[in-house]
Length: 247
Image (cartoon, rainbow, N blue to C red; front, side, top):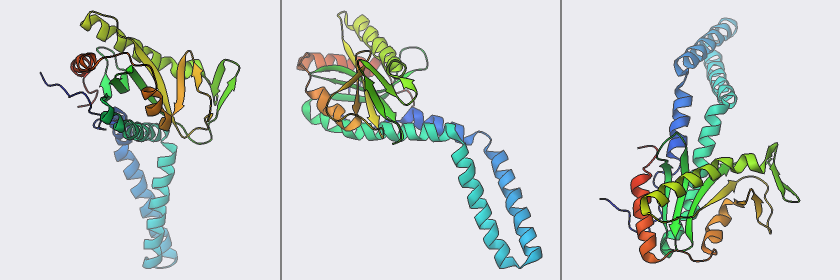
């Protein structure tokens, strides 16, 4: 059985499934888009050639083709969303990579035993087991705390953390059932881009929402709960039962 030694924390696989979705969405309707663009460029070039000359027609054709490409890219929200998600997961993976020097194992983009959900990052070390969910939001989004409630843009904190709570629960159930003892899995949200509080940790349904740059330090500051032998055992089990989502 192959086992990734404890202490590894690379970035291999980070954002793989999001990038695969981006490629699939971008490919949808590609032939039609290219045909329409070619027709637009051709008509524009012929019209300008008829009125002026070929050099000007060629310049207009390049400008029209470029403008159409940019316009359709900006309108293709699904493509942009998946690409942005993949970029965010890779950034988080780089920020988590130094954990390897402290005996942690970090697995990226792992599939759950059933269903279509995936775990962005699974961290296993002396301070426990953590499921880290990456959010790559634009800078206009702001996290607002009102008493115990949290909102980000138009979404409530409960809506935001619902997926990572589900993923952490599934991972905990899987590891507990296989190892024959209770394994606690802590959900965490790593946020890129949005305006986040600097001092106090914001929580929604008990789940911390942290700047992505804060996640590594937050994990290492938690109380130690696992021995070296337990880290190795949990890591090997997770590697086996939670395979890469995208191969």
